[in-house]
Length: 159
Image (tube, rainbow, N blue to C red; front, side, top):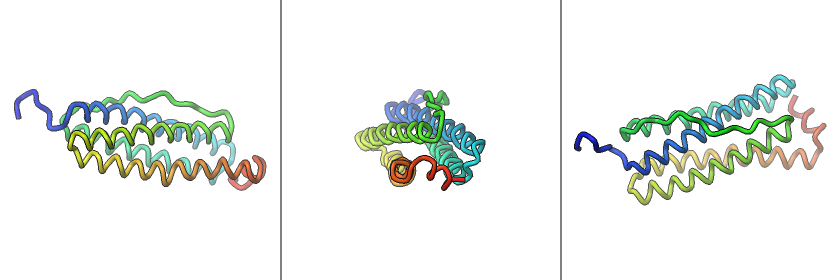
């Protein structure tokens, strides 16, 4: 490899850097929302969202490590976050973020595949599966529960 050549495809590295911003935003949004739930005395949802925050941090960590391995420079600028005002707006903001992240991960899987970077592709697939099967599904379920049993009953169940 020449002096200016990277180990990784520059497009893939740029894309991973964009994904880091989304994962850092998800981490920070979950951090603030979990602390809000804790402040409101909702210990069950606090614990769940605190766990999601840690998972988003580990996704960001994996992306950062991959960018470094590919000899790129990780971009640590995070995307904007949407802080809710109450339980429902927090859940909906988190769900919107997960949909956004899922979409970006799917595009990343496609790009990595096109560029022949199968390690990156598999890593992004794993993150997509966490996003779809875990985070997104759980958030959708909470919103459905609120519609089904009412906000007061839901809040009581989270204390």
